[in-house]
Amino acid sequence: MLKINWNYIKGIVLIGLVAFLYGFAYTKNNVREVGEITIEFEEGKSLFMSHEIVNKLLIQNNTTVKNKAKSVIDLHLLEENVLLHPMVEDAAIFLTVDGLLKVKIKQRTPIARVLSNAKSYYIDKQAKIMPLSENYSARVLLVFGNIKKADIKEIHFLVTKIIEDDFLKKQLISIEKMPNNEFVLNTRVGDQKIFLGKTNNLNKKFKNLKSFFKKTMADKTIENYSAINLKYNYQVVCTKM
Figure: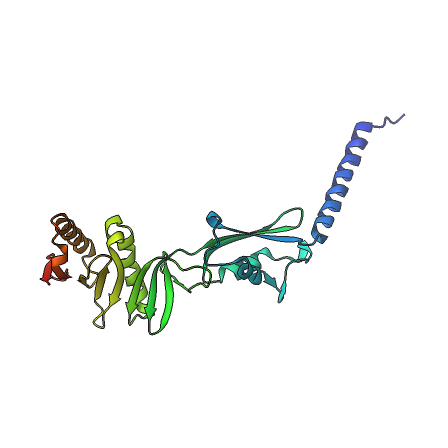
């Protein structure tokens, strides 16, 4: 008489049951609609962007993804839409099991504000152009003059050198680009003009400038000078009032 292997049959039935439940859960999950959208900004600050701005970027086939079935949501497309915004540095979008669409945004970090030919915009830490925001105004170095897109890389280099130095960051408030493509720096205290010239030998120029500042601040003679010239071969040439 043929002996029935009940353990084998039980295993087959169990596998079939698990496959059925998985398929049922998968189908039910896919037809579930996106109920809520949550937006998180890095460090918890929205600053330049609002939740409304981000919501308007979450568009697929010209309509919002809210109340759409999870199965039709293209997360890659939504991320691309968000990343195209000039205020966004990085973004991550994902769906939870219960139909929640989560959006995490990293905004760009401006390091300078440019004012040129009645146009104003930011330059961020990656040397990208970033528009101004109606929500927030960053306290950064002002750069003005006849500035073209070709100048952005050099300005980014100059500004980065300034803000990476705690002393210079406190002393300098703006940069003027002259018609001869040289730069003039303006100080926070006093009316001194610092004629930087080109951005070549910048480390040496700033080292000399810091030495001059520290000496004249210590002996309280800084106000005796109206101009500080760093253009000439590692020298600091000053003009008295």
